[in-house]
Length: 468
Image 1 (cartoon, rainbow, N blue to C red):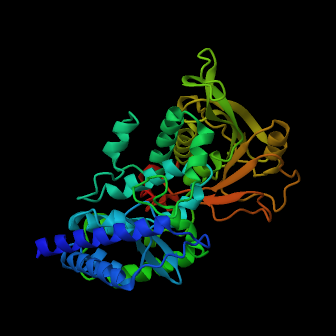
Image 2 (tube, helix red, strand yellow; image 1 turned 180 degrees about the vertical axis):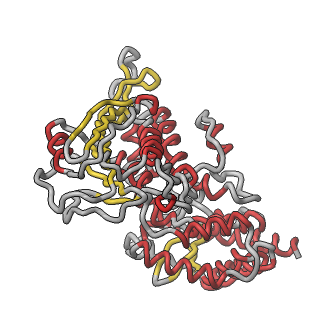
């Protein structure tokens, strides 16, 4: 049976090569590549896919087989990977490039299909949009592939794995880390290796009608062709696919991924949102001796340049008694961790109905004990201060109870409101920024009234990782 399957694959691969040889000589009338693929080839090829699908359904991880069964299938010679996916017409569509796919054995074929389904379950088709423009396409694609490939065996030899990335870029990236961790580390490494940034960007924009080799920079380009759909609706469609694919017990890692998808509310937690904001802060260039000057590479006396972010960040803390020391210490740890890869300056502003103290911090050791006040809360004094001191970003920790309207309108910087675990919502009619909720943690109290203790709280450090 295996020999017969292998012979079928080899014969079909020869036919695929003949098709693309003809296509390479043809002329195309439009940008959508009006490629005429013979019907007999389609039937034979999808016959191979049916056998792979049957093998997946008979596997102990049969979830993938039943998920694939619901997907539409198409052949495209213009994708630079064996398989690719997007969302079209209320369905997920899986695409195959026969000239790349048919070089794999059946186990590798199964893994490439699992790879695409894991991207879907991890909501990568949406998450990639959030990072576009802040990081290179190559860094985003490789980071997402590292995340999903860690669950797979029998990968193609060219697959982007953690081990391969560590070797190629001389890194020591850790396994089972979130997407954000990988994309930041990889972007730095890519910047260091780039000899000509403009040329690299131009190369990445080249559009080829026929792809015969794997290219990690273009593997997810087809995601751009997905129907324009909001994240909530896409999540609902995905959950329907998942429900129809569950025919028995799931492996632990799949249960975890699916649980994260179902429990997400479509919004980034405050700390991931802050990480996203950091990428939009005004940037400049920093000099480096590890890279030649791009305009005059023969001049060894001239330094090259790398992207560098400079951020002047204000962290306002409502000290009126609504936020506990534990909550704020945990939160400022998160802030420091997020901005550590940027050139930054953090200023702490303690306030209630007026500003009580302002000081700068570089590490958690610089955080001072809070002034013991129990006044009311007003937001306006903080905005007067930040308006006059040219900040790039203000992160305001509060229970949300203050004025209905600001007397000073913020200008020239971004704003992130973080409502404390015991707060409800922001009192302002116009927040002038994004409002996020701080995760609950157990709070120490000075009296014996235990009704104030959040019994089911958890530390932000123990939040389940967002699979990106």
